Image (cartoon, rainbow, N blue to C red; front, side):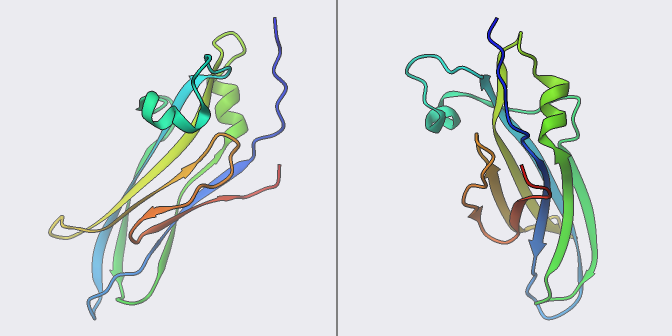
Length: 154
């Protein structure tokens, strides 16, 4: 049996920064989801970590909280609202769901966010990823800007 030793992976906080336009106060709903690419810890020959997003399906751990909604009341235009949506310890997630025997590993974590107004019109969307060595990747999309930040050092 080969035992994988790993350094601590860290705790993470997902925050959403939202700055509406429009010139007056409005209410919004922020919807945030988190999913993962789970693949063998030891990738098969020919499968590269950089190709996982096109070769492996995204999924969610059913026993982890992975969907949130937050009401943003009376948000003033041109003022930024910062919302903390998820806080999690990647070490705890790995310890709860991944064993040496199953050989699986959460290679990429993706967070998607959408902000809707009272008419359920999408006013902003974005996504961010945390990749295999748990270094933040570049963020894609419009406002809201998600930040995946470490809350403690390795």
